[in-house]
Length: 206
Image 1 (cartoon, helix red, strand yellow):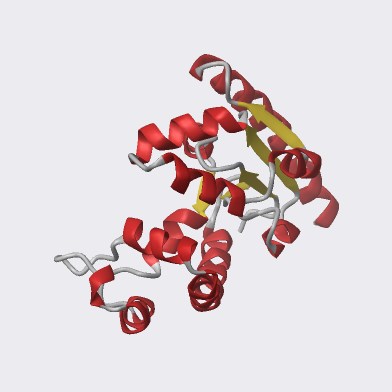
Image 2 (image 1 turned 30 degrees about the vertical axis):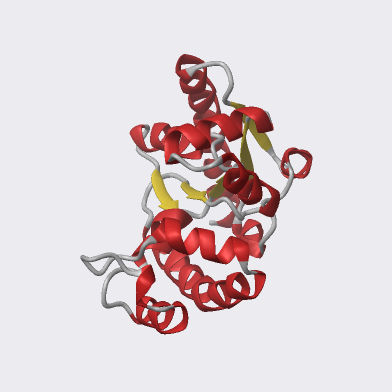
């Protein structure tokens, strides 16, 4: 298990995946909470069966997969439903996250999650990286990517911690407004920094 864990977060549409993909190309093991959240509701999983029983089979696609856009619309319109879903999924996601982090063998692990700051997930991280863009860019990117209406994207953004709070919590910031070449450069700089910090921590605990 990697002893050094770097958390990576950012608001919807900020470019967390673009950044984490670049760390992966540098040989770093990635644990992604969004990926895990899909894994725990795969067809025939107990969690998906609970969701279908609570919300109805209309939230299942013809192939048995969860209709995630429909679920997203449902829970953002109903706070009680959102609370029920989080109570079901968060313990499952936390358990699988820990299992995957323990299996990472690279010099450090990158834990990617949109909820690092507003949850207790940040407590397991040695560094906290925020991928930052202005809210207007989050909105336009997410609408183009997911084909969502502006009002829905705005509700999602409002449910997340605000930009100022993210930046105040950050150990390091990736400005993702300047294009992919500068994103590559910034990730490379941080990678070298984290390698040094991971080595130092390993020596201090050995």
